[in-house]
Length: 421
Image 1 (spheres, rainbow, N blue to C red):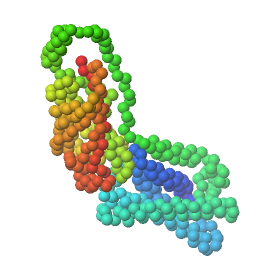
Image 2 (image 1 turned 135 degrees about the vertical axis):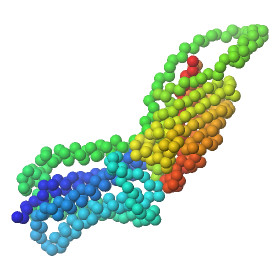
Image 3 (image 1 turned 30 degrees about the horizontal axis):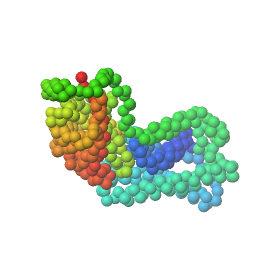
Image 4 (image 1 turned 90 degrees about the vertical axis):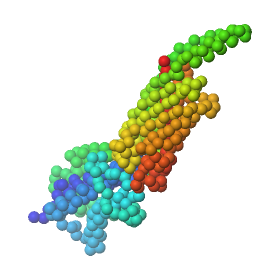
């Protein structure tokens, strides 16, 4: 018996894949924005691409398993064009994901791919020299499906429905009846509501990825410190002045250098870099700081900061896993980074330079940190910005030693709010 419509599963799958393809077009537009969520959107782009590839093979299987309705009779050129468009769709729905897979597999800087953050997708065994070929092919396929096949397919469907008034469109529409009307199918909540929910979820997820980055710490009110103001006498005898200076000097010698306790809620350790032009901000949530500091006794001051590298957060879990791997921090072998400052010098009002040694990725090298320090009673706020060359410490091995995708210099941004007794 010749069917009057396509199989029910094929009809639902047709519209689901159409929605995913249009979503990929929307997602592609957002890839032009170089914000902090670009990496996550690229991962979503790859995940949806693999989903389309899987559904295409399911669609082919349904076409083989269930007989399709006969072709709509018409001019030979029109029937040949329809067959060519349908074959073209199948070729591109397979070719686009495969060329994209080859594209990421041949990149100079390989980025791990997890299918929707769960299933690892291995790289294809292809050489880097073919990267530009697959990049051009992927772009060509995208233009063909969006600017050629989709307009031809939609235009032909509208022509058949409104001009020829045949069953070309209705036999592919989801519905309860074998051949529902266009309006009946459009208002059928059994397929409309799930379609809107699924597509809306994808679009919402994409918007949530825009500008994703490590959030700046919320401002924390500084604890109030009581201060006692005393009026200076208009005239002071030389004897009393000498006595006061002597007492002050004696107290300074006998008192211990203040030990400062860091308030993590009002402090942060951030870094900034780029990946293929995309701005990336990250930070470390786990660290300890032992600080003994007095601006009047810099020779007795010292500080040690130990950072837990596994606490890295760049706004994307897959990227964070890459940073923790042996290609970067190698947290399994070197889980900590340590900066020990043993020499402090004052370079200007409220400005200092800490000279010390930084241990990172198993390598220890001299590191200077200029910083600004504001002390108000028993509270101190230190801010600092600096540059660190990651390759000096071996951070970025193998393909990651290239600086065209990830630069050598990494920007550091620090804020430490501390109190003393």
